[in-house]
Length: 313
Ligand SMILES: NC(=O)c1ccc[n+]([C@@H]2O[C@H](COP(=O)([O-])OP(=O)(O)OC[C@H]3O[C@@H](n4cnc5c(N)ncnc54)[C@H](OP(=O)(O)O)[C@@H]3O)[C@@H](O)[C@H]2O)c1
Image (tube, rainbow, N blue to C red; front, side, top):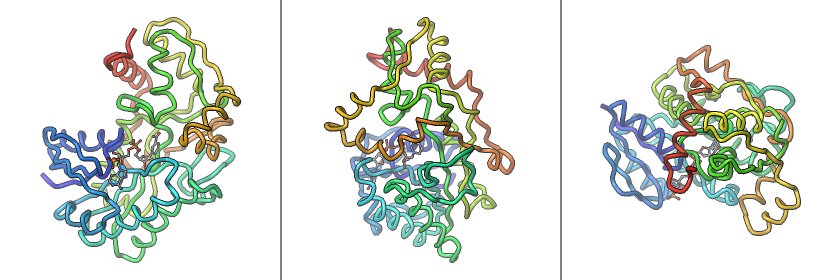
């Protein structure tokens, strides 16, 4: 049994912590708000930007999983101190730092996204996320920390709620057979990364020394448009066809006046207006996690949403 520290307990942190418990490890989870205890997990309430407190909480750990994120509209101010603190704790403890990243750093690209593309984003959010990895990678190359980044496309699956595009805004309506609205072009092919596969990849990479020092894309099924995903989900749920509409730009503009999150989506709207395809071949060639079969993903997602209070038919 070894000690693993998971920073953040949103969908990815929770899935990763629970997977580590299932594998028999001792798990400490760090969030600012803390949580009630649950079997196998010690929840610690601290602000991970406090590097002294984080280092103290990470004593004896073999791996630190960065599954945290500041609120979406405060990334520019709050990611740099968080990244600095994560690196400092990794350096002080010797634990491998496993960063969960996204695809923003590449910026708009024609064709599938591979890990060897430059982090060429010019938007604020993309630059911020690129800088998180660049800092860790530099320290890794200097031999001061051990670091690796695992990048995922938009999360999909059980446990994904507000932060998913095929989740809280879609699933409860879909289960009632009601029309759903999606961001961008409903027919643009899009990569959806299954949340349990994110957790499995984070844990695998943490234990695979040969994988450290570079980014990896989480094994992900071939892209499907939002409309195709909704068709499959509705078919599994047995609701009959569910209409899929583009979120009207005027409604989005209006909602953005009240929601900092929607306002912030402007920078990454390109990801939903044209094909957005993650290539995970490098991971599949070098490591052993594979994307869960799509039918299994769809079934588990429908079942999970059905069991949530207020979501079923
Ligand atoms: N959602 C997606 O589709 C997607 C796709 C690819 C990559 N990602 C990335 O995956 C990571 C995890 O995302 P998620 O959606 O699972 O999580 P999330 O819902 O954004 O939750 C963030 C977690 O981080 C904690 N946190 C934030 N600041 C903290 C701090 N200073 N100290 C300690 N804890 C802190 C929060 O708890 P407290 O507020 O209690 O501190 C919360 O538990 C993020 O970096 C995200 O960008 C997400």
